[in-house]
Image 1: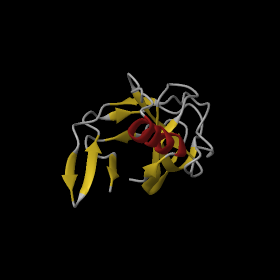
Image 2: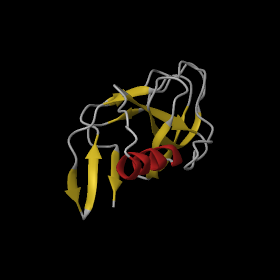
Image 3: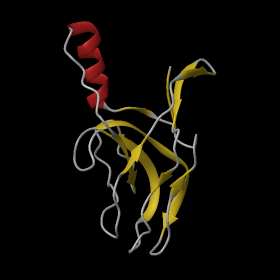
Image 4: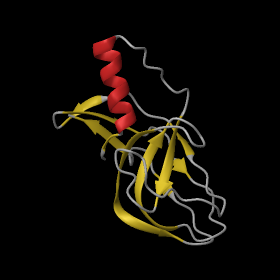
Length: 132
C-alpha cells in the first residue's frame, strides 16, 4: 500500500535500538484523505458529512513477494456521506479515532469520488500494508 509515517519510523528505531517502549494502540483506524498525507501526516483528511474514521482489524502478517504483509480481515464500512466528501486519493492508518498519530499511509488504487448519499467500503483483504 504505502509507507510508514515519520512518527512510526522513529518509534520503531527508538524501540529496537534504544530500548524505548513502543506502545501498541488498542484499535487502529482507517482515515480517508483528499490530499496525500505524506510521512508527516499533513494531508487533508475528509471532515463533515457524517465522516468518521473506521476501525481496522488485521490478519497475522505473512511474507508475500518477499515483503512482510498484513491485510484487513474484516470489511471496513464508512458511514453514508451526508455531504460530498470529495475525491479520496489516499488512506492512512491512525492510532486514535480523532487526532492521534498517523502510522502508515498510501494512495488509493484508484481515486474515488464520494458524493452525498454514497458509502465507501473496503472488502476483506482490500487494505494491504507491507514492509520490505
